[in-house]
Image (cartoon, rainbow, N blue to C red; front, side, top):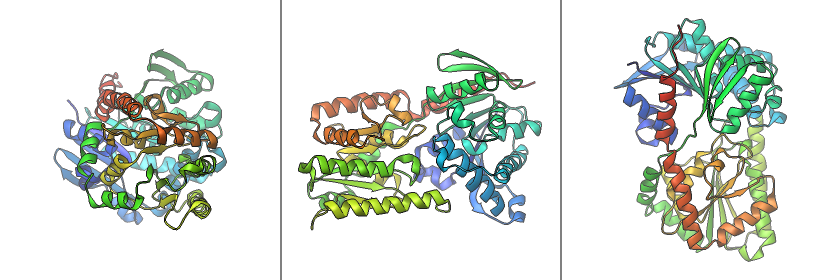
Length: 465
């Protein structure tokens, strides 16, 4: 029985896996503890060429080895800041207007994947299974195969997979899909994402797809592989317990006091153009315009920690969000009332869960998202006796599961304003019914089910000969 090798762009530190990391890192670490193995990837540090080539640095936390490497400034600029986040991220989120393509960045992306694969090879035993995560590492299996690695290797995409017409706006689209076909198992968040991949294989690569429900066999570019839909989740009962435990902490009491009896809409996202933050502010403004009875009676708290601040489009969204929050507050504020509290700082995960529990509405309206675990965390954190209502974008992967949410189109400000009114006014019995429906869905497909199902399917893939 081999070990598990997890490969991701960033590696959670041993300290983070013991409590402060997000649910995904905790879930992956749980699999590593069960099977034993290695977690390999970038340390997050930009280092000199000599330091980068000296790696990987190994930290042993039995039975897990954390193996990390630094990136040089050139590699960071081309692989991470460049092709990964200036090309793949916007296109995969259907924002071609924000994407750029530069050949040297794509070359750097492939070069770093090959370099990372070379670094990993010496840590891999013949019986190990390899689980690679996300868009930064699409060519990783291809690089491993060129190093002679024949181990079962699976890939899970945490973001949407675009339709063939959208993917084709990336000039080397054929090379990217060819690289994906070097994996033995491809996992997608939703059926739509899986179908988009199948459509490309059938139409552009002239391959074959045999579907078996949400699992499929694919033959393309001279390779046979499998695909599946694996809906990433959370551990809902753990979140509920922690949210209740933090309910009496000082930060919660301070928030309650500052609200002075007003209803609370909570919204938490990374500062990213895919999250629909500006559209969210406009819909909240529409609520105050169309329903003046809510003025002074409801507050929106938007927590949006800055991310990728060295990418121009992210600086622009931050500036726009600050400008719109100021404009709306200037229009509707009173001496003792600020409609929008916009906080661009990081908060401890469990503090956020306790704030979710105190709110009447969870406001999760991305323009496009792979799954969106914030939506699931919001539901799990609620008080069953007096739960809040989730207002959720139809373009979040979670919308297919959380049928108890109030679903909205984030491009329709009036429709979102109406949904906020509905949620704020919803009777207790209906809120409880919607909560129970959503919690049942979370328990059916929790983080452990996602992890164990993918790894079971990977272990059943025929080994390369």
